[in-house]
Image 1 (tube, helix red, strand yellow):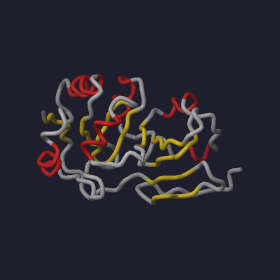
Image 2 (image 1 turned 60 degrees about the vertical axis):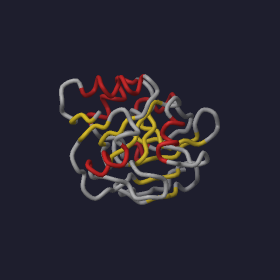
Image 3 (image 1 turned 120 degrees about the horizontal axis):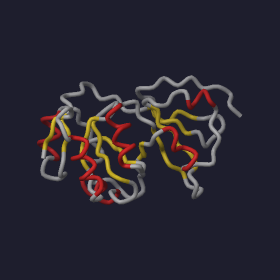
Image 4 (image 1 turned 45 degrees about the vertical axis):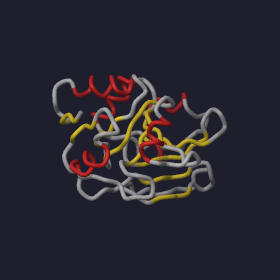
Length: 187
């Protein structure tokens, strides 16, 4: 099913799909993304993308959820980039690492509030291919594989989030993207 982003009931439709542990495609704050509830939708998204088991997905969260996800203390200047197109790799409460992003998009913020849990987010593409940002290409490629695609129009040239590893000292930019991070000596 394809639904326009500003249609009445669109949020209910997305929440319904996600509550069943399925994935959908929505316009995110930087590019279109597959989204699904953590951890229920991981295998579905991997299967659709053809992504290997060893490559984790980032999780979108609300900034205020961070204390429930990590014991790491982040410097305020890093937290000032959130919400926004910065993904930070942090040590999670299990001692492993997780990439988190607090999106700066009202639709995503509402979706996170209503879901109440982190959501996986990953670019809309087959593994190893460039992300798709043309809604027609997305529908052609994935329309039969996901129960819901939210049409936010074409998003133009895709620019993914910047990825910053803050588990190392000093923090290290792993992928330069939409956010220009100015690193400080933080420890």
